[in-house]
Length: 439
Image (cartoon, rainbow, N blue to C red):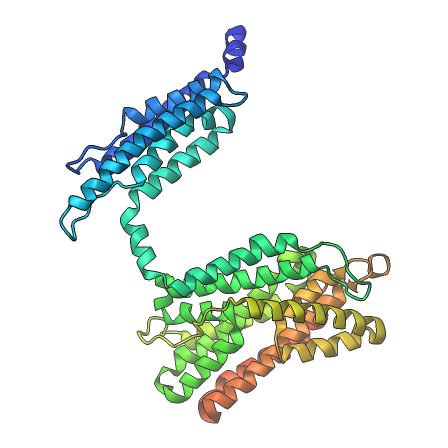
């Protein structure tokens, strides 16, 4: 029995792979016929053709696996036959009445070629690759209506923006050197670029969820998604509405406070991406601030969570290459300034810088701390973990104080007093708890 198992395992196409290949071809063909079965025109491919094509692809590869000549010859023959089909499809499409739809253009040749190439995929690669390729083919084939609906609803600007993000993350980032370019610059160009990608990715994800998801229709979740992008911008937007629509004060005040809670969680996530130990040290201080924000916001929203009115939150696209470049520059500047302030003035100088950065943009300072914080600054050169954790708590506290001032200015003294007082209280709580931050 063991000899038979050994012989089967040594075969180029093991029995289990053969069964898997035929099953995948059958499944793919079944989905193909289900999709095109109701049409009057027969198309090449289906529940019998695809398993045979997959088997032929595997056998042709096994015959000459070194250069794949036999497999390539079979692919050329198959491509010639599919070319004849496509020409006939184009001619038939030209004869159709205007407005009539004739399905099965390039999708039919693409599915047929995919079925043929499943053979060598099942022979050469792990089984999950063949399964994933088949499932992807079935989903793309059967989700035609939904995918075309999505294509019609996505504006061209969003497509261009997605391309920019992919260029930033997939092209520009790998080209950046991961070595220190100057002794005075504590972070590498790659580390700065990675920080930009991480922050931009979080903001862009919240923008997409806000724009295209059903959750954007809820006032509470809309405010929270906007806070992932910018809690300061969300506070300003909701405070302005609070002045003009005081009847929505419960929803708007609750949204302002919850935006701060989301901002604190966002800071923890950003830090955790680059420095998990530092993020754990911040839980004692920032975790309590976030808990206070969510508890207070929940009390303000009690009984008003399902109000139909939806406050306007920042919905502009947060991803722009110019803004990304500016953020990278700010990140390098803040990291360098933090390192210099610590070495020249000690932790006190760093805490002053943290408070000042909280009055502008907390992300560059927070990322700079996450990149330069080390357990042993004397040996590795950097900022001590506990000092960096305390500094981040101070910058978050300063930012909450700034948002409290914004709430008072844009909502007016009468309507803005409550959110402003709560935000200032959270700023004070964060400053008091800052020394508890340890890593």
